[in-house]
Length: 315
Image (cartoon, rainbow, N blue to C red; front, side, top):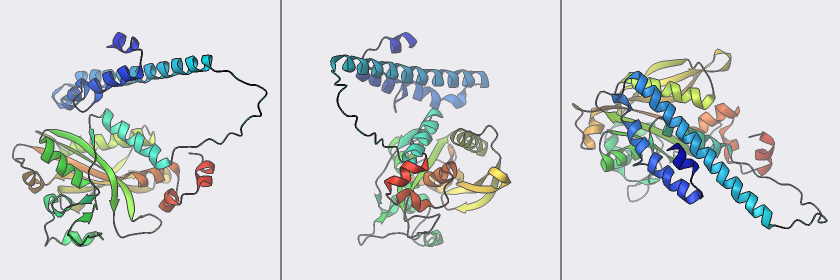
């Protein structure tokens, strides 16, 4: 594989090979899904191979792009007598940066990225998630309802239902997208980004959940030692349900996500036998994690559209 990557000449060929290895049906993706069946040494070796291959692809891409650039420059003529144009460089929005980082981390763990419709039906947004019409948990969310009974998606958990209905089990995925609720203050927005992870297979435990969350937070915040606090909570679609706090600078505990073991009723609603398969789910707002990472106090700063703020904030 090393020589195959190094001998590729075009970006199109490189992308095709990358997809065959790391795409949804890629060879490495399949091996990562089967990681739970390996011993510790084999897991470590597979993780090392995964990281090495990604670096080889990244390095070869940079080499090809540089060669293209050099070739284009060699064909150009430069008039040194022209007045220079003032530099006005743009930057990626911090939410875009954080989403790219989060997706890369979860994909390196073997999770497959999914998206879904923002305009949802009642089944996927509520009922299939163990929240029928009479359930009091519906009152916990200020939902935007449409006249036909559909809603603006209140949570990306709906994507999990669609993924299980489509691909069945075993499944290891994460859904990303915008969600909508009637709330607006310094720490809440009527539209916010949410990411939900799901792993369902035989023998999946709460320990697997905590291990993935700890490693994810360590990678995202670039912290060697992440201290977590687990608190019991309630969500209709998980049982048991937990809230996960992380010790932040100065010893302060901050709530970072909700999680739990997938409720048997949710599995049944997707045609999965809960006596044979178990799984966990976790969810968080990536904009809230971005606030922590970039040291922001007001979530509304992300959406004010002031280009001067983006330039001066140092992202």
